[in-house]
Length: 168
Image (cartoon, rainbow, N blue to C red; front, side, top):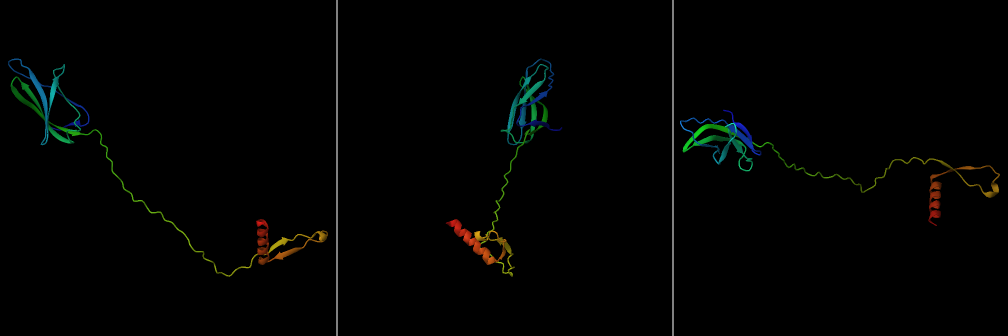
């Protein structure tokens, strides 16, 4: 017979139809016995209105581990013991949650720095020629404007004189 599937973390209800035949009427009590090598549990049964036997098994999450357990229905009539049914129950958790730690090594950040300046020793190209218009003195206003070509040295001298004027 295939095991009856039950949940460890929820209440389970089993219903049995029990027929007692005899020459005289007698009171009967029923119970369900759950057994394996390490634990034995007993659950009292109640009769419902249809004459069926109902066994309520509470959540057993903290008592049993997942697995298959032998169960037997025991009936006691007056002073006589009967075991009319033996079954197996497969107990499982209704929900499993697992967590696993993931350890990741922190990668070292790469940094780049430069401490020296490298000069390019290629042949220097001649500096471009810049045409600058010199201010015309007051007395030659009517004369024609003169353009003059400046050398690199002239440009440097102009820059240093401007810087000196700004500092004052």
